[in-house]
Amino acid sequence: GELNFSLCMIPDRTYARVYEACVADFKEHGALDVSNIGSVANVGLMAKKAEEYGSHDKTFIAKEDGEFVVCNEAGVSVFKFSVKSGDIFRMTQAKEDAINAWFKLALKRGEISKDELIFWLDSSRAHDRNLIAKFDKFRDKFNSAGVKFEILNYEQATKKSLEAIRAGKDVIGVTGNVLRDYLTDLFPIFELGGSSKMLSVVPLLAGGAMFETGAGGTAPTLVKELKERNHLLWDSLGEFLALSASLEHLAFFRQKKEAKELSDALNRAVASYLDENKTPNATLDTRESHFYLALFWAREMAKSGGILSKIFENLADELEKNESEILKQIREKDGASVEFGGYYLLDEARANEVMRPSEILNQIIG
Image (cartoon, rainbow, N blue to C red):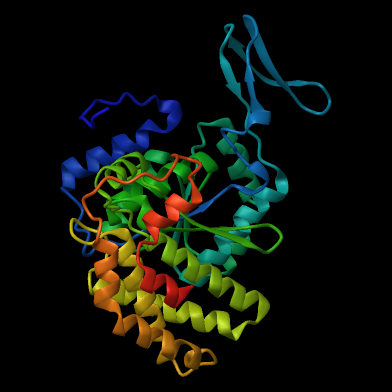
């Protein structure tokens, strides 16, 4: 159960060339300077379960040796795969309207950001060839909008993206669903040290959006440390950014000035959170970092002069006045083992006792 170094064999069907190109780039150019590099954003093909690689209704287990045959509506075989008994077959698909929405979103992001788009599509793969062919009817729209774009295979796209961020430029990767999953871990790890500090925005076809952050694969280690010595090192930066972006989205679509005020103040609070280094570390844990985020956010709201500023003046004063006592209560059981009555399904009372240990803070914020 201990972490250790290992060698990974990555088959090409899972985009091994992406990682191979990264290793080659680092060997040639050295490590990335995270203080100066740009970033790689992503526009992924996801709508209507496009290219979904784990959906249960598209997953089949072979009951015997034979073939899985995929047919079109006319019953004509499109492709087939030989399988052995017990083999798992997963079928992916992408609907026309989802693909078109993907192209439109890429165009919109390119127009807004002015960053170059890189379509990660390999013409040697049949599925990608179909996507490239469908893109041709959108090509003129991209050109007329002045949006720069390239269509590159995975190795070329990796090299071009690394070249761009080394030069301090931002680029947008336009990818299928699986590559979206890989790259929204890979580049945030290069840029930030983990996907948990990254904001992911997934626009929905009906106009809504999903705002999320990665976990960075750290949950088991963090939970173990929390249970053993009551110290949690989860950095909620990505969640703070997701909350700000969701408030901004609400402000735009519902014309809510209060939501915009909250979003802007939260962005400034996040800047203070980073400037004052209140991210979790060996001496400061997640609960303390959340207190500081609340304090910074309340301060920003109080001095904003906006619609809600008066409401937050008293809250900011109370948090500032009780800072030392709140931190003392949070740290009171630091180092002692704790129990929260489960792993996935927690006992609510125990979880609250562990995660909300300051009575003063609970009284102030409710």
